[in-house]
Length: 231
Image 1 (cartoon, rainbow, N blue to C red):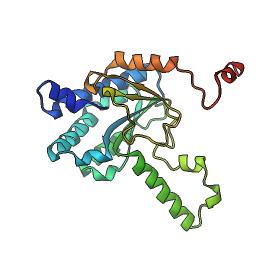
Image 2 (image 1 turned 180 degrees about the horizontal axis):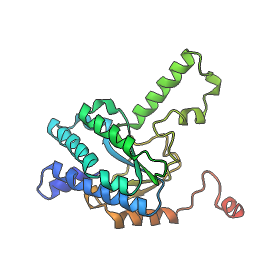
Image 3 (image 1 turned 60 degrees about the vertical axis):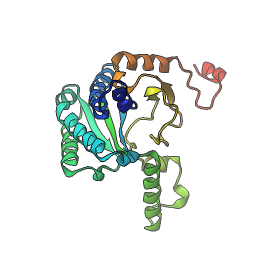
Image 4 (image 1 turned 30 degrees about the vertical axis):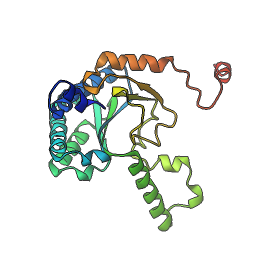
């Protein structure tokens, strides 16, 4: 969700105002995804590297996160959206962790229609490091045979193990990099880049990205002819 700070600066406002308006985009895109029947939506809300930003901006982001968890609770419940957080969540203040855990429990209903994942204090390299450490511990403890470590074993230990594969990555503000996001999971994802900054990315822009995705031919290493022959 890139471009909040620059969006505000271009308008002569403080960076936090861009993040505040960006939280409205979160609601709009979440609702649009639910309406389209998207199974899982993951939002890169706060990276592991964001902790290095100015202290007042970090404090403001934490306050906005808490406010979002309070404000959008009815939207999540009314639309049967299950929310979860991934990342180094223990780096956040206790009151934020408590609010997130409470909302996770409240929205974890059997008839949930979509999973909304907030990547918080998250980094793809950090996640893969955590997976490697877990595998190393299990091998050391004798509960895992090193010869059985394959792609499935790694996948099962990622933060997103219970989510479907990532089909589409939407990159706002025209940036042409992954920024340490879901590095394992996006191996075969399609990437759509828009020059819109996140505060301006709403339902219409999300629909455009989905339409662009649907025009792509997803070959997964095969040829176009093979896909046609397979029907």
